[in-house]
Amino acid sequence: MADLPGIVVTGASGRMGQMLLREIVASARFRLVGAIERAGHDWIGRDVGEAMGGAPLGVTVEDDPLDAFARARAVVDFTSPDATVEFAALAAQARAVHVIGTTGLQPAHLTAISAAARHAVIVRAGNMSLGVNLLVAVTRQVAAALGEDFDIEIVEAHHRAKVDAPSGTALMLGQAAAAGRGVDLDAVSDRGRDGVTGARVPGHIGFASLRGGDIVGEHDVIFAGQGERLVLRHVATDRAIFARGALRAAAWGLDQRPGEYAMTDVLGLG
Image: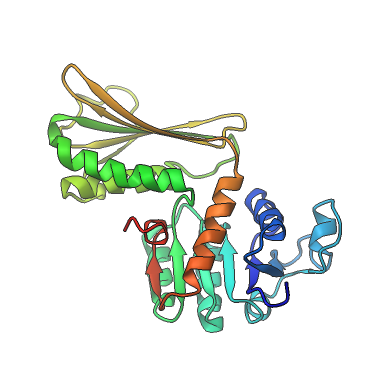
């Protein structure tokens, strides 16, 4: 195990953080060398395995990311946009591969992440699953083939605790559809409808977000034409698919030059 590349998990106490920790411990790709939480969190100073309610893992939860990143070859980050920007700069200093699964990133965040990618490998995706990234590729192809004779609607559903909408995956799918048509998503995006909205604008791409219960993630891309509909669908039932995809991305990134990459690059679909 000592010869395996070291990896750090940020947001260790979160739902995805704990899933990542379990997958790392069970995998033969990496060894866990760090677990990060915000200053003042009650996990700080505790063994991360014991903090999760299990056996000790020999890794203490800490709030100094730079020190932890310096011991690692890779960092996996499913946190918040502002935290991710900070982690990107620190991972770049450490020349560690930074895998970003954080959603809700705004243009200013993306600009800062792109700057960090000049010095280190960054793999960023709104969704790390193999199936979703295949769906993204297919969505682009179908949008290009069908053209504006078919209206595009993207419907996504997630658990009640998700704070951003549309989901990062829905936006990935929207961007793929827009790219297939050769248009800018921001110019043709409809984000929710309420009241008397008027007729649907031709060429626009609509989004609808559902929240409830413990839904892991469901995404439909609907191509609605006259007399027929094509529905592309992905359903996630186990959050572990995102953790496994993130570790695959981290392993792939170890052999790449500095730059910003997508999960489609990792899977050879770019």
